Amino acid sequence: MEKQLDLEPIVFPGVEMSRPIIIAGPCSAETEEQVITTASQLAQNGIKIFRAGIWKPRTRPGAFEGVGSEGLPWLQRVKKETGMLISVEVATAHHVHEAIKYGVDMVWIGARTTANPFAVQEIADALRGINIPVLIKNPVNPDLELWVGAFERLNRAGIKKLGAIHRGFSTYDKSRFRNHPMWQLPIELHRRIPNLPIITDPSHITGNCDMVQEVSQQAMDLNFDGLIIESHINPEKAWSDASQQVTPESLNAIMQTLIIRDSKQTTEDLTLLRKQIDECDNNLLEILSKRMRICEEIGMYKKEHNMPILQTKRYDEILKTRIAQSKTLGLSDNFLKTLFVAVHEESVHRQMECINK
Image 1 (cartoon, rainbow, N blue to C red):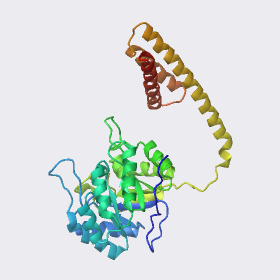
Image 2 (image 1 turned 180 degrees about the horizontal axis):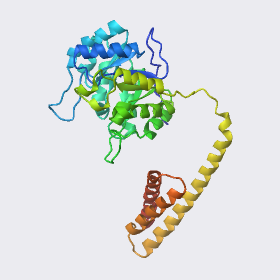
Image 3 (image 1 turned 30 degrees about the vertical axis):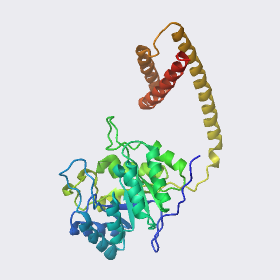
Image 4 (image 1 turned 45 degrees about the vertical axis):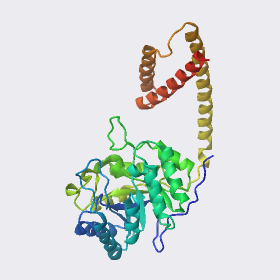
């Protein structure tokens, strides 16, 4: 059974927080003028939490890695002049100490840092006794246990105001996304830790400012708690991730078009349809069970006749014919391929057990 985290709501005295929570600001703090101008425009549009990258982890040396602590007084000025809360990414204990020293209200842990338990533990130890809100981005690769482990490390250090940032996952498959959303992973995280707020990062998921609205709406349709969106006064001249940043004006337009579903609506009227779903699921399980029993018989036959398990021609034939069938049934190619790859893996596993008994 999943060990429940000891969590508290993320609230700030004197600041009214309602869904969706919006965190916005430039990918990187570049100059004091850029930070103040962007923040002022965002504040005018009702944004209450300002974000800016102070330390930027880059894939290769030589790229802009952030202005460092020099930019923290700029954020202090944002807080003083606009009343906005300020937030930054931290990757080391030094970052934590600097952020706290300059009155940062909330920090987040980036995807590359989440992937390193030693780094997460260092941050947790640095935050011990300082119960400010901490958001944790999913690790670069789709590893849910690594993500959950980061929350556990922070919670054991006494951090109770925790939240998740869903920023998508790296994949070798060709995709229109910079980082594939893989919605099933934050959904599973929510199932396992229901009281953990989830903030979606459409900027890093899409890598494309034109797709930010689409992914933002999908996050709202899934009843996630908020969005963290990169916004820059002049995205074309941004020093990092120019293509995924939107202007404060564009962000305001996106917010105006978002449809926020009513999460308090009763679902009693869905009872009959849900019963039909249950019946379909029961039938699916019976059919899958029958299919696996047949696979075991095939495994015994292959054992008796000293045949190899993998029959590539047959597997290829199954994939092609089933996917062709899917088009007449209104099912997507990707869904059918994912389904039958999983079914085939289990079939091979069953046959291996038969042959090696």
